[in-house]
Image (cartoon, rainbow over all chains, first blue to last red):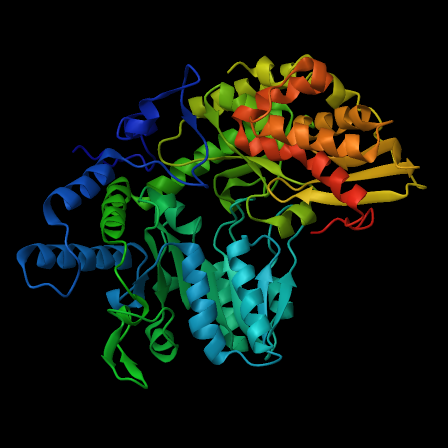
Length: 417
Length: 149
């Protein structure tokens, strides 16, 4: 299996990378597939597909319990995946990495296992206007259960987040700052390091939704100082239902378990139970073993490319995309400066409804996502019911952007816009 | 499937020149609803007298499928009795579910929407206005302008 080698130039050879992804060879509606929906889910390289196949063909067994060779191999591969993920996000200790189905499950875990234990009536949970529903709804549920209240942090008209507006809302009642590392709609990347320091001064913990941050940027949780970071495996070349959660060990130790059941316990009596130490305290039942091993394979692929190079590549593509969409007459939401944003470009094109637009683009083989992107609070702030979103990853090229623009122009002609 | 099979000319015509797209301040019945999938919002107004639907209008925003379906619906049900309107709503849902033959004699221009059946996500767009009409007639809908969010 050839992993595309790192190039010296600080960017990527996306054309060569494309060849590592079997699905990108397929034809859709008679046209070559142009996949611009990686913020939704990423495609998988041959290496990851092979890892999963090999796991099931050679090593499949349940973890920890069995004493035979297969089970030892599966356990070593699964715990090895944890070490790989910990290294990838700069976590000093693999025990601080809990495997979950992804970001949604991770935030629900924090809101329930930490929130229900430590939040009290009148405590405040802050989140921004650009959060994904998965970083809003779990906090609303835990607020209702505990008497805590939620507070909305406004964004600026240009889609940026002014850190001083966050700091103005931080008080001694603030217990949680829940914030995206990179908006799935606007691409906006808040100043996490500064905001974490400010929140800590106020006595709040910081929960970073890393669904879009981790796949596209070098991340070091130790340097950022965050308390929790959530990770979505399927958005970073890994299988669906792979992913995890980083938490500071003191917090993971102090909080309650989340799901109860097998594998998370030390001893069980009729009237009470005792629990394992983190991370296994949070891993009840049979885990997504093949998926997390597949995620480790995806991380190896990304590490071989180099995450700085991934970021550079997407910054270039984002700059090109902003320019091309603007020239075509599209209105792009979010920061105009590629330094301040990731590669999710949400836009309106000539008043054509996003659903109609995406349908025409599909006929041209171009995959984009229309809709509210699980960000209804943000849609209301932007004053639109929905947007069309094109999003980039390591396998996208400027030619993909050109194909998008050509398809947009066809849609414009079709709808007489 | 070719695009012009989905977007028949009649659909584009109703989208660009919607019929009965207006407020109806003296409507006896009205209902607002949104499609949670795409955020599209529609309000349907009904003026009814003696068990007959004398006037139907709609306002809202949405894709060409939802807007053209609403426009064609207003023309398809005006002047009909409650029972006839209920039957039309049922038949249209049946066509969108692929269970009722898209017969031009029975459906008129609405037949143009049959291409939507192949796109389950878009069926919700086509049916939205009809759902709202049914709720308005049942008197269970929320007052106009109070679309649930």
